Length: 304
Image 1: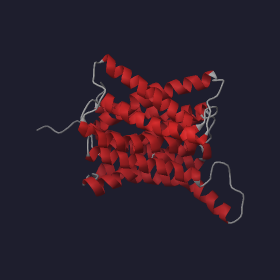
Image 2 (image 1 turned 120 degrees about the horizontal axis):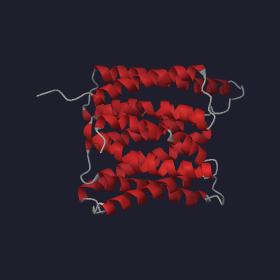
Image 3 (image 1 turned 60 degrees about the vertical axis):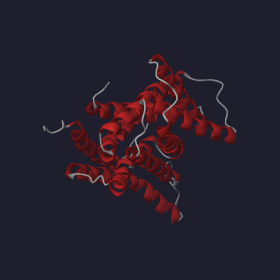
């Protein structure tokens, strides 16, 4: 199993490249169906792994509140909002706006858990917040132009701002709740149940929306789905909850600031995104904040 200090870079790659992977999936798979399929297959994979390890699949009684909170907020709301976000704005901007989550999580953890950020974390928060603000500027400018009657540039709708921010808030709330009430039991089993709740919500929404799966699945979509299920869902969520168990909610959240940087680079290479100069300034600031947070979580504990 990975040491906690190695988990953040693995998550950065797994979740960062998941953004262009999901964008590729959405070219042929409807959004609710894409999430139901990805999460459902993730459940099957983790349940199979638990069975191979002869781990009981039924959670302990005390784990159910955290399973429901994590399944609804961290999995269902987060995944559905990010899927629709990529249909309303660029993958690059959606990824970075979603990762205002560390800023929200730090504020909620300070308020609800008394988890006051240390000086290094405060600097990381400031850099990350400034970077995200830079990335929100084009959206706010486009909205102001639209309000004055000017035509709105593609990828700058209000939903393109609100959906990723909603995803960030849901993930932050789920993170703080999980830290406040940590569930007992095996992490693989707990993650499988949380993914299952998310898959159920997405499947019911797909049925209500009348979505249908495509008849033809191009190879690029199959590869994107494989990455989404195996790496970004099954492996990454288990690692995320392990990191959350070994570090504070603030530090755990701050380490994810590198995810949108990988997401942007992946979107440029794989789906043709072209960030503006302002975007690049924002990316650099966010990466600086992530680097500070990563140093914090990788630092060995003091000797006693």
